Length: 171
Image (cartoon, rainbow, N blue to C red; front, side):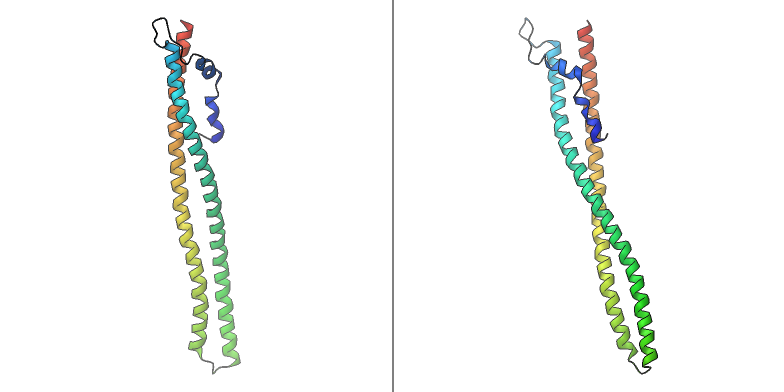
């Protein structure tokens, strides 16, 4: 169920049934239609709380999804930049060795490895964050499905009560 499909509670039959809320028969008890209206009202109250929870979950899901996409892009570009950095550092090391064959290769390799490790650490941090966001997105999606299922259950209950009300009115 999408957020736009949640307007089933704005049904003409529901509104006409709500006019019977609180009506009592000659014996002082609720009429059958008043009883059905109270039950429908009970479900509608629950639908509204579920609707607000679902809207909050959808907003949070959208925010997390955009964060996930942003982190994926960061990781992708960092991987490209990491490969380019490795190529440029290797080229610089070869160039330095050509210019000065007596250069301390161990020191040169240490400096290269430090730069690569720092960049890879940033990449790993982004990867750890994207894992957390992925878990959150999955959790929100599950929560949304749970809310949608519960709202669908309420809709079916209200439909059954409206069918009973139609039968009472037809009699």
